[in-house]
Length: 282
Image: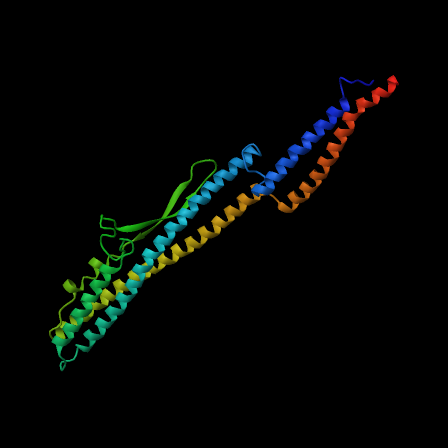
């Protein structure tokens, strides 16, 4: 039955065209934004996961900055500790030379005093951004170590927990107080006592330098891990929401052809009622 009031063919053609136009608009959005899932309405579950992961990525970028600051602080202290070991070895050489009777002990002691002052100067200057891991008070507020934010640990759907790497001060300020605790050389006997003193100081300095070196290595390793983890998370988010542009481009071409065919089909369907006029003659 033909009708000029109800054109079923036109309605079907119109629904097809609307569907094609909707898919075409979505495909064009994917090409312009580079994302298959750009808003929550595209896929609410994937959108929610991607936003949580993006939040974690932002957090890890901040952690990377924290680790860089921690690395720099420990590196300064480590370099200073190694220099102090060299200074103490120099003092030991002077003390060894003072073991003989026919040397100028006063001159040697003056040289030792200068090197002792240099050790104290290095300890005082070994700070980065106000934190000194060679001092008794690391930050001027009573801290005995440096806490470096190192990770965000997420388990299940719970809130992430912050992790940190703690680096304790080696406190050369107290443990290497040569001005007070190194025996002053006046003769061979005092030189022998000073030799025992300096051996203890050197061991303390070596242990401290080793501890700082280990902490520096750990921070460097964690920084490398966080960088790789951030890249992996970013790649994971991309796999969830980014558009496959090759596939999307091919789909765009197909939809454009479908749009043309659907438009032509609707045009033909709209012309069908005109055929009814031929039933009435002239």
